[in-house]
Length: 119
Image (cartoon, rainbow, N blue to C red; front, top):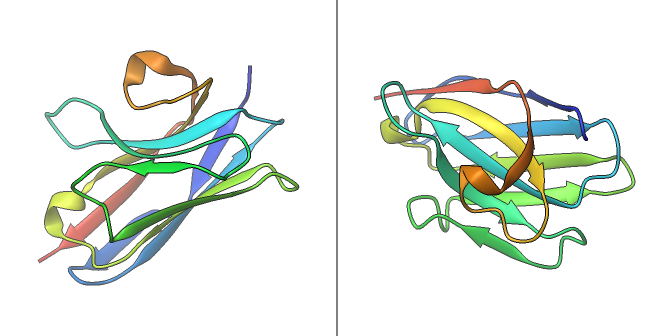
């Protein structure tokens, strides 16, 4: 089991950027970011393999968000550019095994960090 702690959320204007970070208590295998808007189901945002050599993105964020990790520091980042009001949500760091693109494939969750994009 891996303890995950996110940081970096906040309020930003549309078109702006934010960088989310997640610190893991130990070495995590595959990692991902999910988000959940008010009244909606939790949805996949981005995934990165254990070595960082493979990534995958939801179509809604492709070309705007970049996921990365530093295994020496046990950290996971999400660089978010060209933010839109529809990106407003609670963002969650996640860890698991293999491809993580649905919540049921996640073994460990962080507590979440709020991102709000104003129009």
